[in-house]
Image (cartoon, rainbow, N blue to C red; front, side, top):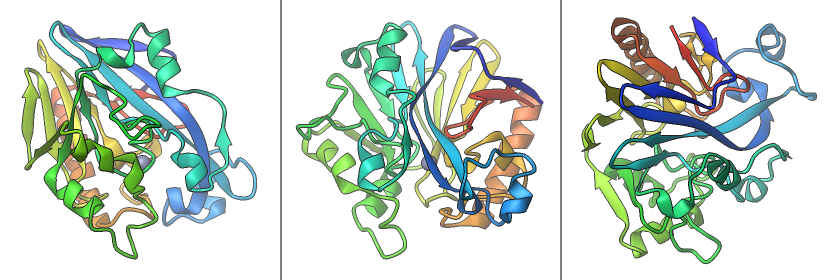
Length: 267
Ligand SMILES: [Zn+2]
């Protein structure tokens, strides 16, 4: 496995993929690297104290001749709402500007799913879409589940981070696999949530897959580790194996939303 920790972007054929982060947060390591005990996950992951681990909130921007596509929207102010200890390391919008993008330059937003740590900046403080010129792509299943929260899912969804999208008529609800633009494929995976999707970027024979929470960090490539918030762990395992097989076969890069150190790798 080759790990890439320094690059701000990579060219995938004619498209350029930028890596950026929002603020990091801390959660219990045994919930993030389930079902390992603290002594087991400490063999590879850093213990930030009290058994907590650092979780990054990474996004990518896919730039092509026709589109600027943002994948996932960070944690925004949801971190405080969910009472997380946060690290003041990055802010998504500042990172975008540093790369030369204004929010108004984004014309498509792909949300892997609607958990609070993936759509923190989807909506602005007034309840309007933060990316004023963009349509937002979400799986219909995910939208249905996020608007019908139950006892088990209420710790993962914060309706104020996405409900304004429907009112503003910027939502594109898709059913299953979907190609929103040339060389971009939304791939319905289920697993983490029933409506979870990953985003595949392809151009000129090269490929990069943003894995979403099927593989939140490079450590989760292991079949015996998953996340306590996965609603369907066996589906996560099946999809993970498929992703690894396809990534090896097609030489895709894999980009992770939560890896503490490494935005992307090649197997
Ligand atoms: Zn997540």
